[in-house]
Every structure is written in structure tokens, then in C-alpha cells.
Length: 304
Image (cartoon, rainbow, N blue to C red; front, side, top):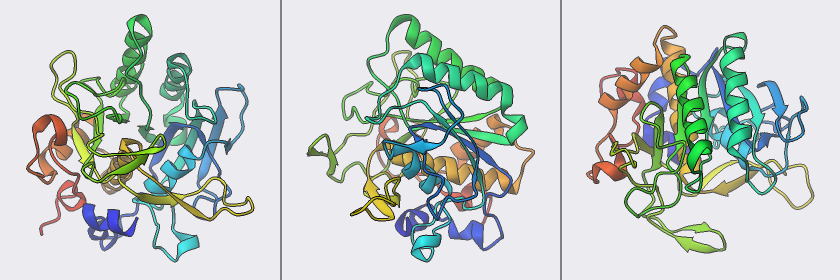
């Protein structure tokens, strides 16, 4: 995470006392182990949509890793693996099982609960590091409507572009929505481990089926070391490494938490406009890099 924070210029925010305080980030994922030293005391609400119980925990590890990227304190590593917005707070809505799989119906339920309760928990950002190319018909329409209803309710919705690249039009649902912020991996040229083998150029490419240019933005997603949900188990460490657009998405969510903590009056549309005008051009095709790689100083209007 030291490398990631450097690549997106996050230290410039910290120099100005901007740490993400007061901003709630809802993580729709596999849950979170809120006992990790970097996340302890930061989880204000947890619900398991697979069991319909108000409970925390993470039997997959994906969601805990995501939360660490967004805003882990780095306490257990002397700050080395600190996330982007270490003073934000989290809501964990568990919609993925121990294998990282879920259904569109469960995700839709979680989104509509969030729309109704976001203000209660000061939620401004929704992180969805999940998606599918297989969702069709009514399920696809229903999921896209839910993320767009969340956007229309004022939430900043960030979703992964998916790991189905480099084929044209390989963005996964719900990242195909024209309203929300879709995140690709800026370093997908590096070969990373996926499904027992190594792949490169995996980040989903646009355009969408509706000919919308996607992704909107990219962020580092390769070999990201963040919080491990299994740190308490014998033989496991406090941190683990994962790769993919799932890891790039919380880099953007955490960066936007910094922006919103600096100016809480910004609307989600204004956030998206600031993002569009401040990214660093990587010199890649528009349907691969979007507006470019997220750059925190530009977001915050800090001169270089």
C-alpha cells in the first residue's frame, strides 16, 4: 500500500490534514473481520444477506482486504500498509459467499437497504468490487436499476470493471452502468495470479453494449497487500496479497473519501466531474484507461 499511496499522490492530502474523517463507505462484498488491528473500531454496521442476520465476519477474505485498501490504519505494519482514507468508517453488507460468489438479487436487496439508511450512517460512497458478465435479462436490468437508484439518491457508487479483459466490451455488470464510476486496473500489464494461473491485460475494456466509453478511471490493482481476514488462524499473517480490478476499485473509493472529507458539500455528480478533470493520462486507449489513473492532488486542487 505504500506503493499505491505514492502512485496516487495521497500523501499530499495527509500533509493538509485530510484523512477521510466523517465519511462512511459501504462495502458490498464478502463481509469484514472487524477485529483486524487496522480496522478495529471502524465498522459501524454489519449485515449478512446470506443468513439474514446482523453479523460481521468474513469467510472469504475478499471484503476485509477491500476495507484495508479503502481505509486501514496500518497500525499492525507501522503505517506501511495503511489504506487511502484511514479515518473513514465502514458499513459491511455481506453479499458474497466464502467462494466470492453471490446473486444479483441479494446485491439489489442490499442496495435498496442502503438507499434507505445511508444518511443514518453518514454513508457517501458505495464500493462494489464484484460483477458478472453472465447476468442477463431481468436480473441485469434489475441490478443496473438498483445501482443507478443508489446514484440518484446521492451516493457515489464505485464498481469494478471486472477481470474479463482484454476483449472489447468486456466490462462486467454493474460496471456497465453509464451513471456510476467504473474502475479498471492501471497496471494490468503485469502478470498476476488468477484461478491457478497467471494472466495479464485482464482489466475489463469498453465500450459497453450501449456504446458508452468505460471504464471511467483506473487505479493500481496488481499485487496489493492489505488486511487478511484469517490473521488470527495458525500459519496466517496480518496481511495478504491480491490482484485485480477488485483491488483497484477501493483505491478510488478511498481517494474519493479523502475528497469528500475535505468538502462534504460536494454532490456525487460534482465528484465525478472532479475525477474526470484530474486523472493522469497513461497514454492508453480510452476504453482501457478511461480518463486515466486517479490522482489525489488533482482531485483536491493541490498544485504540483
